[in-house]
Image (cartoon, rainbow, N blue to C red; front, side):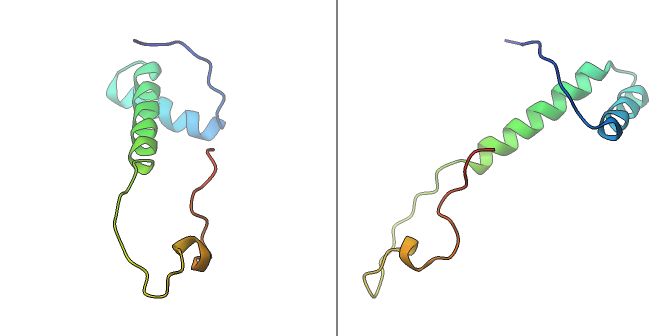
Amino acid sequence: MKRRTTVSADSQALATLEAEAERRAVPLTIVLAEAVEEKAASLRTGRRPRVGIGRSRDGRAAADVSADPIARPPS
């Protein structure tokens, strides 16, 4: 199912996509749809759960010893 929406973007980014559409002789909407799908696929891949089994030698959880956040807030 396709859905229509309005996109606000930097004029230079749009000019790049417009040039690509012109080069390929396709409507800008095709290039925009491809860009949206590529970004969505990247987000889906990045958010896949990673399951692992491990054992701590000292009994501490990874969250207790890691300086990095366990998860990033959605953007």
